[in-house]
Amino acid sequence: MPGPKPLDPSSSPRAMLGAELRHKREEAGLTQEELGRPLFVSGSFIGQLEAGTRRMQMEYAVRVDEILGTDGYFARNCEAATKSKYPDHFAEAAEAEAIATSIREYAPQLIPGLLQTKAYAWAVCRAYRPTAPEDVIEETVTARLDRTRLLDHPTTPLLWVVLDEAVLRRETGGPTVTAEALRHVGELIRKHRIIVQVLPFSAGAHAALEGSLKLMAFTDAPPLAYLDGLGTGRLLDDPAMVAQYELTYDFVGASALSPQASLALIESAAEAHDRE
Picture: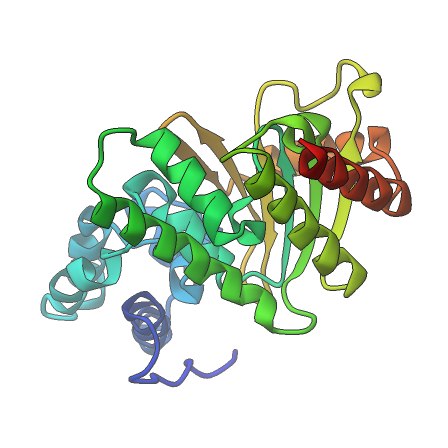
């Protein structure tokens, strides 16, 4: 059995809490399944808590303290570990995204947050909150752009996106902003940093008509699926459900254009918006 993950003071509170959970669990001689049983969660869920891909809720923290005899340690630190600059429905997914080794996403309406430019992100956030003060929009946009730094690494995470053709055609922030955003996506493709396919209108009905889908894989934790809705989001870890969504993504990708044809369509759409 591997030793406990070292605690790094510069790590996020959630990562430190997860490392300490693993340390205390192993110290108590319990497997992940044995710790999960009295919490009514799976062993894989405990593994995700330990890896920092899932957020520890207060109800679990209290029970973990009781089971492991940690004198309130997890309850005391739970609040700090759950603070986030992202909306509640997306916070857990954003933090999991930050440590994923691969991300596959189907985007039916908008360029995904990881690929957005500042002007495009501003237009999206203003549309979501038309009466919010400017400083609130700026804070939201800054948090969104912070996520794009994941792509500063030359290879990790692997990012594979399927864009619905509607994403290319919809003017978000006006034609100039949309053209700039599409050119940005094209540049990332040409730098071989991301893989993008376009699902054309001509594909007709497809497996993901009901909404967006994000799949995340990790080095030391089971994969997750994230479903995004209007002000809501669901992060799923059930192996059977995740496998089903992986199949859904594969079906969508099979109906999409090749990466080469997709790049040509993206750049053509950018030129069309420029002409307007």
